[in-house]
Each structure stands twice: as structure tokens, then as C-alpha cells.
Length: 585
Image (cartoon, rainbow, N blue to C red; front, side, top):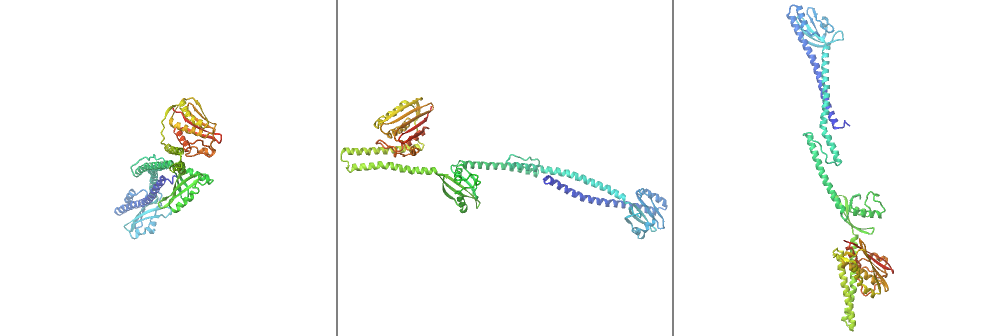
């Protein structure tokens, strides 16, 4: 409302102040002019009375004195001369004021002192008729006489009324001008303040480019300058805070570890995607939805938070949720000495635990693989040293076994080194363009003797629309050698191994299919892992024992060529390995 605004308050204050001053001034002026007019009229009447008394005393001719008196008196005044010998003279006036006689002047108590004591009197009194009020002055003359001058108070009242009208008119004009001036001044003063208020509202809406116009160079102008400077500083600091917030948000969002910021009540204030995954798992286990508890921290994290707040120290816990292992470090957050909440850093340790288990399994598998040949080397060498083998043929046979086991150990070490380099990303490929037809036939021909020895039918089927491919021929031959060798050795007599080579405009594929013992369904997901063997169901033929690393090495080589290798198998029906590579120009 207007009355509550600064403009209204300032204008009303000025108007009330000026009105009060004008009211006091008007009262004083009216009183002053009222007394002034009465005193002036009395002085004029007294001067007239002095002149009349002087003329009467000096002039011997009374008629001349009366004529002169008629010339010098005020037309609105009456003059009465009372002589000591009982004579009386009264002038005429233009007004209708009641004329007084000698008897009244001599009997009026308020005028008696003029005759008895020779005093000068000034009186305002009601005349004998009871209706008229008049001012009377009297001056004594010789022989116990007196000159009286009187006139109606209506003359003075009329003058006072005219003066009052003028004063009131001036006061009214002053109030009107003051009102206009008050509104002009208040508007002039408050206009910059209103603009500052609007600019302040703009700042609250985030419009930091808002500027207040500088219209004056007084205190309000300085305030506008300070406001604009404040807006620039506020924009600078808000931008700095926004950048820091965005930077912190980007850092938290890009962290591999989960981060949760909590208050004392367990409300989650800030989370990042890894933490969201843990929270979703916790809510799932507790049969809750994310909005059921207003983003409350679920158990068991809530209990950990309470311990951190009460004990005011860091807590480390391991949580197993949905088959995954999480390690959480929760640290209290302080507001000076008061714990206002906590921040939890969560790391998914599932892969680390798995890798740790793989490392332990790897060590156990390597130890197991090395223990057998070492035991055999030790046993057969002791037999030779102790002359257990008496004949030359027996010693040669034992030496042959020792030689084969040493070769097996060498292969195992070399394959372990190759696999370690591959898994470390240090595999290097010597890519070159290879003609498929002679390349594949050469590899098949290499296994013809082994197939014949095992009485296995080895077949090659070619469907080549593209006669060349860019690969590392040695590494890819290592893959095919492993697959074909495994197929032959796990296929019984009169069995069949079919190698199918196909090429199209975009893809090259080789499948190695056998009708051997097959792989159990539960073992299929693990055939490409290190040292994994399904010996319990696959009859291994041949004297050469494998290391369990061939398929793992093959998969790493195929992955390095950006290809895929898959396996399908049915127990006692056969196994098929399919290798696919994208063609490169």
C-alpha cells in the first residue's frame, strides 16, 4: 500500500511536520494581528482624543474646535466631549452605532476614573443598548471634563477577519505547495531506492547483470555505486562457487569409488553413481523403494552412521550385498566442534577379491602342474643314480621320460610367460597379408600324421570368397594348432575332425568340430580360463599331457585380433570351436 511505502511515509512526515508548524504559526499570527489591530485602533483613537482635547483647551471658539474635530476624526469613530459645567457635545458617524449621552459617561464606573482621577482610559465594553460592543478611550480636560473617542468593534473584527482569511489562504497555499514538494522530494529520493529494490529482487532470481542507474552523486548515488559493486562481486563469487561445485561434482561423479554425504538424521545429501548402485542393492534387499524413506540411509549403513556420530571417529566396514563385496570408510563431518554428519567412501572390492582368488588359484595350479614333472624327474633320476635300471634299454627309457618331462616344464614356463605378457597388454602382433588357401592347407597337412596315428579322419572344408586376410600368421597358427590338436587328442578311434574355413567380404571364420567325448555343460563357461581341464569327462589320448593354458592363450590372441572365439559342446557327441575375425583392408 501507498501508506506503507517509503514515498508515503516520507511525504506524510513532511506534510504533518509542515502542517504542525503552519498551525502553530497561524495561531500565533492570528493572535498577533488581533492584538495589533486592537492596539493600533486604540492608539489612533488616543491620538485623535489628544488632538481634540488640545484644540478644546487652546481654541476659545468651540464651534471652530468642533469643525476641526470633524475634519481630523476617523469617519467610523464617534467623539464625545463632556465639559465640567455640564455641557456635552457628540459628533456623528457613518455607522449605526448607538450615540451616548453625558449621563452615561459620568455614571459608567469603568470611565469614572477619567473624571475623578484624571486618568487616561482604554476600554472595550458593551454599550447601553446591550447589542453593540465598542472600544472607548478617554482623556481628561480642564474643569473636570473629558474627551471620549469610541467606535464599534465590528471595524476591528472586520479587519481581523480579513487578516485571518489572508493568513488561512497563505497557510492553505503553503500546505498545497508542501504536499507537492513532499511528493516530489520523496519520489526523487525513493526512486533510486525502488530501483535498488527491483535490482535486489533480480539478484535473488539469479540475474546478476542487473545494474542500478546512478542519477545523483550524493549518498544515494554512492549507495547505487556500492550496490552495483556488490552485484559484480556477488556474481564473481557465485560463479566461483558454481565452478567449484561443478568441479567437485565432476570429480565425485567420475570417481570409481562411491561417495555418500549424510547428515545426522541419515538423509543422503550427495551420492555418485557407484554409491547409487550400492544403495539400490541395499534397498532391494530391504524391500524398499528409493522414495519410501525420503532417501534415508538403509540398514546396515544407518547403524554404522550412528556409531560414527556417537564415537566421533572413523569406521571401516566390509559389506556383502547381492554377491558383491564393498568396503566402506565412514568419516565424521564437523561444524566446528559439532558433528553435523558423515561422508562415506565406498569401494567395490569384488574384482579385487576375485583377482586375489585367481592369484591364489594360479599359484596353486602352477604348483600342482610343476609338482608332477618335478616328482617324476626326481624319481627317475634317483632310479638311474641308484642303478635300479640295470640294462641300457631301461636307462634309456628312464632318460627319455626325464627328457619329456623337462620339455613339458619348459613349455609350461614359456606358456606362462606368454600368457602373462598377453594379459598385461604387452602382446605384439606382426600383421601381414596372408593367402588363405595355402596357409590353411599347410596347417592341416601338419596334423595329418597325428590324425593317422590316432585313427581320426581329419577333413578340411573351404568356402573362400575372399582369398586373403591380414593377420599375424604365427600367432594365428598357434591358435589353430591348439584347437586342432585338442580336437584330435579328445576324439576316439574312427572319429572325425572337420575344419571349416569361410571368408566373406567382412568376416573370416574357422570352425573346428569333432565328434569326441565333449565337454560337460557346467564346464563350458570355464574352458578359456588358465589351468582349467575337464579331464573328468574328456578322455585324453596321447602321451603328451597339456598344461591347461592353450585355450587361454588362444583367446588372448583372438582378442588381440579384435575377434571372437566361442565353444559349443554336448557330452559324448562332440565339441565345436568357432573363431571369427573381422577382415581388414
